Length: 338
Ligand code: KG4
Ligand code: ZN
Image 1 (cartoon, rainbow, N blue to C red):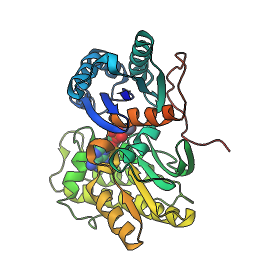
Image 2: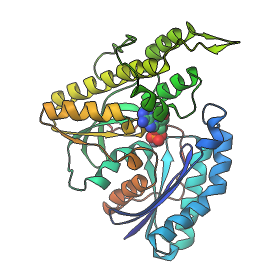
Image 3: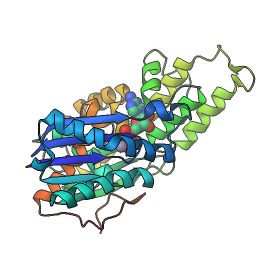
């Protein structure tokens, strides 16, 4: 069974082809260059760029998989959450293909796609497990009991971790997206240089806005409108100290939650799961506790369509499909009712 996956929720136009649960091709056209000069994603520009790229990206995914559109048996597309205009492009394209080809269509929750990406790399992973979903739009812990059975244990009260990276990068006059840039600078800095606050949210909730403000206040001691950033500010140390605060919180809450729900498997998913320090600290702490850690490769952590195709395929196998009336939604929780 061949599944075509489509992802256009933010600033990557992506298409992938899966044969059952293995990836034949995964194409990602990034819009980073387009949005970079604005310091973040401009929704209207993103939609137009998706429109321009979607058909060539799908063609490329089919070509790299050496399959024809007529061979595809299922089309899956991200329908929530995300930028509405961006989601519309992927969903409309997927529905049009499904209608024209007479094949089923299934809408996928982007967050579910991120979590299930781990199953592409570790097909035998099984359930249950704890999933930390950390991206530009999400920071949440889920008790994943089975496919479609996700109980949220806690989430951010304000900014997502990726969003905090992007904002700190902007404060340092560094490019968008901030995650990879800060990650790289942090490797050359001292994480103990500045003692930024760790969030004190109750339970498994997170908060990154206080940290962002603390970083901003620190940077503003060295920044002026006319002269920019004073070279006396060691941006490597700021990056490393900020990153240490983010990673400390993510690792601490994840380990506490894993112990409380009594699971021995942890999945870390989403764009921030590409972070080198988060990866190594999670590994260390999981090893200490004899827990299995499942970290998808970098390409599967950042937005891609292979994870969307897989989520669609797994639900389809259970007999689920979506109606062609399904409309994109800017937001929707990924939780199991009750
Ligand atoms: O999952 P993703 O590609 O898109 C969303 O669904 O949001 O995540 C993008 C986010 C951005 O905020 C980006 O700065 C962050 O992931 N990111 C990273 C790294 N690579 C990407 N954050 C920290 N370290 C990284 N290496
Ligand atoms: Zn994402």
